[in-house]
Image 1 (cartoon, rainbow, N blue to C red):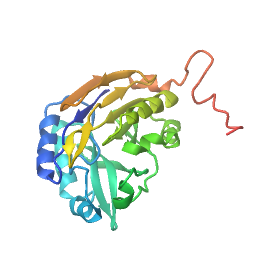
Image 2 (cartoon, rainbow, N blue to C red):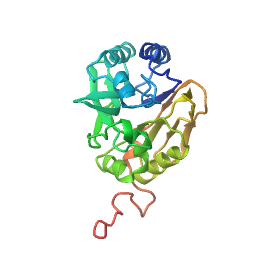
Image 3 (tube, rainbow, N blue to C red):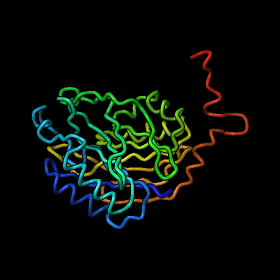
Image 4 (tube, rainbow, N blue to C red):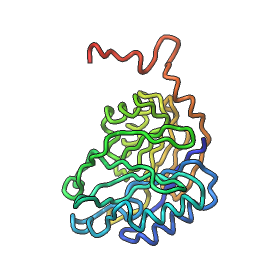
Length: 254
C-alpha cells in the first residue's frame, strides 16, 4: 500500500485558497492514502467561539464536496482536518473521503488548552475504516496523549493510525511513536507549517513503522511524501519468539 502525507501552510479563513493548495499538492500523486493536517481547510487560531462558528461547515457542505472531487479525480483516499458544525456544536474533525464520497469521520475527543473554550468535545468512538486492504484508525492532535484511545483501535485490528494535527509542541510525535510501538502498527502524523496569528507551527510530519522506527521525518517546508508499506507486518504482534504485544496483556490484573 502506498501511503503518505501533505504538509502545508493553511491560510486562515480562506477556504478557497486552501482548497486550491490541496488540489495542487494532491494532483498526479500515485497514492492509495494521503493524510493532511488538522483544520487545514480553514486555519486553526480562532479568536472566539463566534469566529469558529463562522468558518465551520457541516459534512455535507461545499468544502467536503470539493474535497471529494479531488479524491475522485486522483482516485485515492484523503484524510482531512476541518471544523465541523453539527446540531449547534462545533468539532475539530478528521474526515475520510474517497472517489465515491464521504466514508467516515473522527471528532477530536480530547481538547487542548483554549480549545475547551471554543470547541465541543467529540462524540465519535474510536473505530476503523477499511481502504485498499488496510484497516485504519483516526485521531486528532491531542488524542495522542491517551493510549487507551489508540489501544481500542489496535485491539479492533488497526494496521495504520492516522493523526491529523496542529502541534505547537514536538512531543506529540514522540507519543504517536509510542502508540505505534505498543500496538505494533504503522502511524502517520501530520502537522502544519507557517505562522498564524503569532503562533508558529514547525511541521515535522512523520511516518512510523510497526516497531516504532521513523520511516520519514520532514521539517518546516511544504511537501508531499509517499511511501510503500507492507501492512501485513502490522498483523504480526509477536515482539520476539516469546512475547506477543496483545497476548501478553494481564487482563486478570488490569
